[in-house]
Picture 1 (cartoon, rainbow, N blue to C red):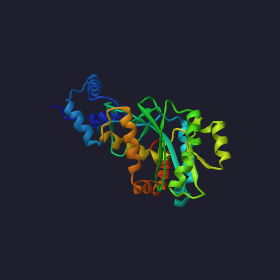
Picture 2: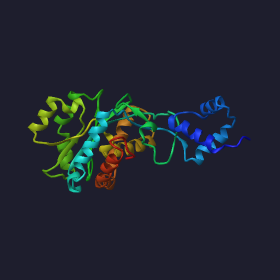
Picture 3: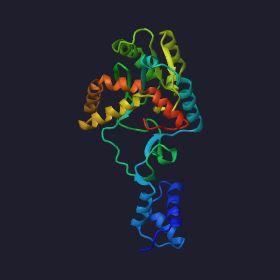
Picture 4: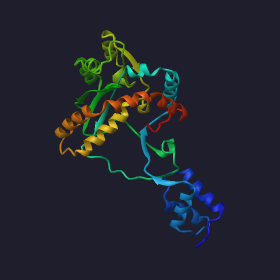
Length: 281
């Protein structure tokens, strides 16, 4: 069996650093063209020794430079906010839940702690399909309302949710008092004139989030929790999916919500450390 020299080992490592999605077969072909003749197992062992392991790439939002700059600026601007402020925020967002989960299989070569390096992630576009979409909110005091969205969420749908007194009901239920802040995103349906006017007329304090910044919104953790709970109950149709989702949302423990909010500063620090790119939240 040909011995892996230090030079050859460095060459193998360079292959995966240059292209984390490269296959062992492709590495062997590249090495073969350079006159090396080693086995698949030898390449794999060399990569493992260097700290690289095959992993599924994390799915993250498709970020452009303006997105990362906005996330970084937001994190820096809010780093010194007290925990009491974040505890008075009503966090909101939309998510889709599929009746059956994804079965995508793809691998990359990466080291421990590099899961959210941009070259090791798969960019995704929000709401690219699915079965049911929901709008929800929560605070440090627990989950608020969860509303089923019919069709694509646009400003008309959003205004309908607001007009149904959804956020005020949630704020009252969660005991936020009078000095609470409503958080929502920066996409067109949230920034539409009719939405801004509605919120201003109702004297609701707003905290606008940068676009494409789920890492900054702890409700993303609750969406993940909700999807795990829903899939564990194996809904067989959309009606079951809707009923189960609302049932499980209401069961999310207050302690889970409280911990997410109390750790918010750590999230901002992580965003700053990763220069506005996605983090392991």
